[in-house]
Length: 196
Image (cartoon, rainbow, N blue to C red; front, side, top):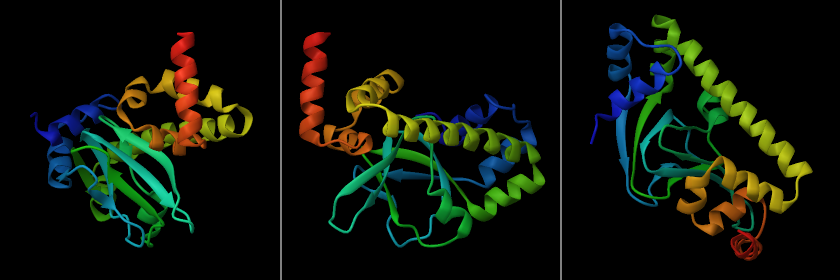
């Protein structure tokens, strides 16, 4: 397997290319974590200590309501970030879980290390701002679709935007993400397959 931190450096290079000092600082200020399937990066009640960049695998972020029902908020696969940003920045306990859906390798940057990178190497501040803005735009669009689109339209958009996740993530998790029941999603998938 390629060095996970080298993969992260290549990811940043797509925004603003890093110089050698920045690459060294990033490698010194990050750490690699390996998660087993169903292993947790974050559990409810813990403080989210790091941004996690997925090098290999797939994770989900979800909340569990008072009835024990899980509500998926985000999936992250290779070359994507996952973090409970509210807990991370406020350094307060999270109400969320981040769980590996399959064996995963992530590179984590903790709060103090991120602040150091921002201060000593301003390019990271600019890179992270673009990354966060992109994710915020995606979240806004998803909320608008959830309010103004039918379940069929939301599913079609999900498959169009994330075809690999549609094949990779169990129906129960996709249904939760889309705000429908697993049974409804199964019927919708069957209908889509017949029409295709």
